[in-house]
Length: 351
Image (cartoon, rainbow, N blue to C red; front, side, top):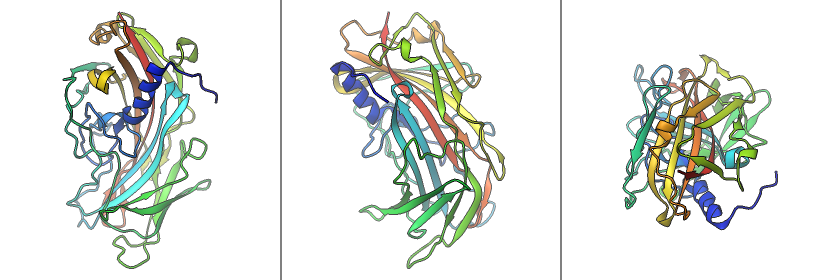
């Protein structure tokens, strides 16, 4: 797809959005949604850590129960993210990590920035004002484990065989990562099994197979704002005019061996000072129905419009999280895997 060149001031903003436009999508337990992000080598869609959205059954991401004796814990991150209102891919990843039950996967940890307030009721928004001189950072943008599960894992179904290769960091932490993740290869709308051979010296996770345990969300199709609404890839938006955001899905939602997936969505607007790229304000809104959201003028007007000198810019992002029902894992616990699909874009706020 050809992309129109942006003016340098917005090109810089897009570059920043690619680095700190995303959420810390830890899928294991409650994380905070930070105001600032530290992407490191990862793309970060929203600025900072994940907070628990209202799941249908109010449970955390990848959860491993204490009903039986725990021998390991696991995190599974399956993420696809767009920027430029769906015109460009910003993140594509499939990571797995194993660690001791008393440990954490590190995803979202270490953040020191002020956090974004999230609404708790569908159809409402929550506003946050930030200290523009806050120098705090967001948490880690990757999962890392301490337990070895062999050289390679495989996520499979009749059409896919995704190899997750073992990666070991300098500090000895381990994760399993898919190196061939692209839009054309991403398993949108698929249900996958996960298996590992568990062979080799020092392997802590023995051979296992989880049948139809991972449900990946379908592709998100952005329809509004449309390309015709943009000016050089940027959406002009008055804070006194409602903002409409509409989307659809490329396929039906998948199911796991334990039943249908639950889906939760959150929409976040961020207003950023260009100098120092400091977050000034945020407005987080929980859609009341899938497929359409209107941010009313009463909520939108809480954001400060640009004074006319392009000293600020804004970004908007819709996140959809898909979580499967809990399934038994061979290491004596229950596992619940999640995936995330999101679309974001840049705005210029005016009075």
